[in-house]
Length: 70
Image 1 (cartoon, rainbow, N blue to C red):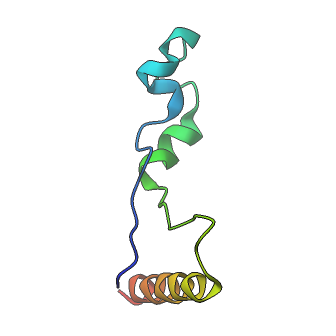
Image 2 (cartoon, rainbow, N blue to C red):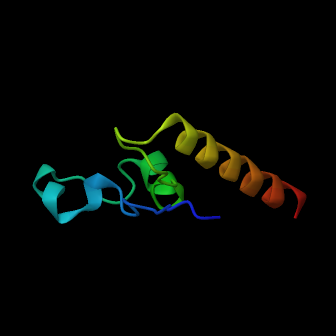
């Protein structure tokens, strides 16, 4: 519907190379591991106007309603 979305961090931070030195591995943060690939990133930046925010909200509500009906 014209709203850019994405999954920006599909791998939990503790499993990325940048944090490998901390010694955490799979299973150490099970909630983060379960949710990371499912968290949806929506547009968010200082120049987002109230009208654009309303549009994003309307489109998100519409998409959730469609999934709920299916």
